Image 1 (cartoon, each protein chain N blue to C red):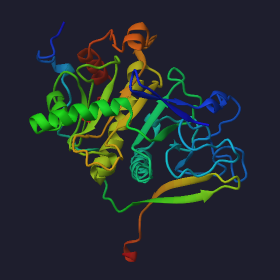
Image 2 (tube, rainbow over the protein chains, first blue to last red):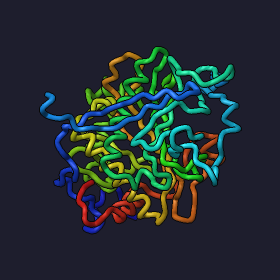
Image 3 (cartoon, one colour):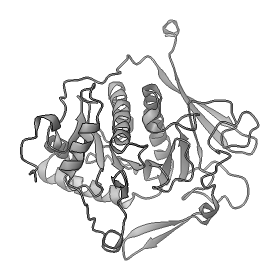
Image 4 (tube, one colour):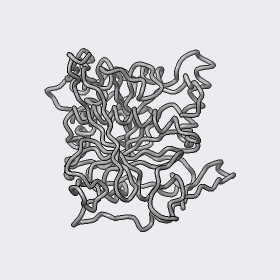
Amino acid sequence: MQSSDAPLPEDEAPPSRDARPRVEPDEPEVLTMVEVELPDGRYLLLYGRYAPDPHDA
Amino acid sequence: MPDLRFNPLRKEWVAYATERNDRTFLPTDFCPLCPSGVGGSSEVPLDDFEVVVFENRFPAFGPDRSGGRPVRPSSTGCEVVVYAPEHQLTLAELPVERVRLLVDVWADRYLTLGARPGVNYVYIFENKGEEIGVTLHHPHGQIYALPFIPPFAELELQASKEHLEKAGRCLHCDEIEGEAGGPREVAADDAMIAFVPYAARWPYEVHLYPRRHVRSIAELEGAERWALAEALLRLTSTYDRHFGFPTPYVMALHQAPSDGQDRPEAHMHFEFYPPHRRADRLKYLAGVELGAGTFVNDTKPEDTAAHLRRALQPARVGF
């Protein structure tokens, strides 16, 4: 049985932490939320993202 | 109507919601969470959506709805978060952009619900799989806006607060430092780390943390949110690869309460509890767990962490 302090076999070693997240785009998008009220009084919150037109800034 | 009773012997709240006993149960010919088109009969009578949030028709907490049609609660309550319109998908199969949106939605609901009067804790979670007790397979999670801090969160916060006062450091940050690069680490990158905890209750329990000390999901920055989305996908798909099927689990988000206190001792993180101890065996809660509150684990966290590392996509490093 392997002690928790024992060195790990090569093939079981945790992966390197050199890698950056695969997807790290710029953050031009913003969160949007549209509230929809249904005829029975219930409501839905519709979430999405959109990229603002930089010319609107 | 939903009701709360306090058990003084265990110092815990128990929720009663008798309407839930008759809620929709694993329907085969109709999904209440699928978009049913304008005028349709599902919970989402729209043609399409990305992520949609609405009040749970069968809440465990919240205002009295017995008098008629549902109302918008002004305080505590239960919400459903539908991850995608596609019925057959799971969280592990969503595009990373959708999971990134989900992270934003969770953050927004945490702030919005947490600002309501009477809400002291926003509990975000997902139950996946019939073994866990789901009644609908459509990919979705839930949010409970609770009037109290639930016991597990309370215990963690108290332990972390005591450690902070004694050692001047966050207990979670110390846990992360102790697990990084060790035998229980499952995966990590610059922003996130996932490991099987030293004293895991469940065989394949994994805790997923942002490395930076942030109290809530709302405090994550943009790059960290992308990293979290990646990590959630990697972890859930790793479970699926290891077991060879869409793996059931409970996913629980622990973070700072919404009780108006600063809470520097809080460090947001996800906890995953898959019920399987091997592909063909479930871990059941029985006499020792339910009657005595002590978990018996048939596996060593160091071994299950190694199993999960072997199931990581080989082409990828870190998350």
